Image 1 (cartoon, rainbow, N blue to C red):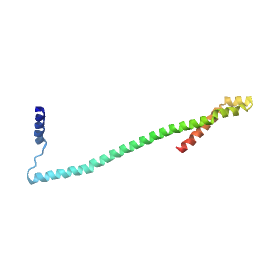
Image 2 (spheres, helix red, strand yellow; image 1 turned 120 degrees about the horizontal axis):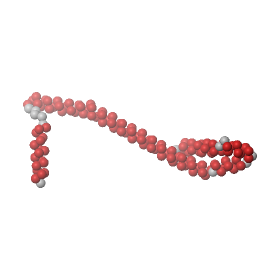
Image 3 (cartoon, rainbow, N blue to C red; image 1 turned 60 degrees about the vertical axis):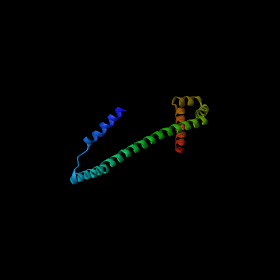
Image 4 (cartoon, rainbow, N blue to C red; image 1 turned 30 degrees about the horizontal axis):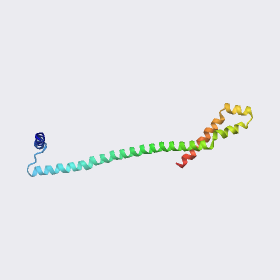
Length: 134
């Protein structure tokens, strides 16, 4: 309890040190001038600075949200495209079509990795098709 009273006395007695001594009509005019100067400074400097910092923060957050949303949307679309490609069984259809070719032509196309390229192109087309929906 004594510490609380002592702290309050210190706080109350220190306000006189921070106060400016305004006496008479000139002191009142000076206090009013300081008041309006502080208000003008607040409106001219602090408010625009706050609005600038607020707009920077909002634009940053919106940009980060958009980038994260695009990343997650791409992950979702790739998962859907992968499922569609697996359901169509593109690789097995390409393999069955390749088995119908003569052996020398089939060997040449395997060496050129044409079947892998066709598989990649078809999967890319499916992914692009799914991405258009999202």
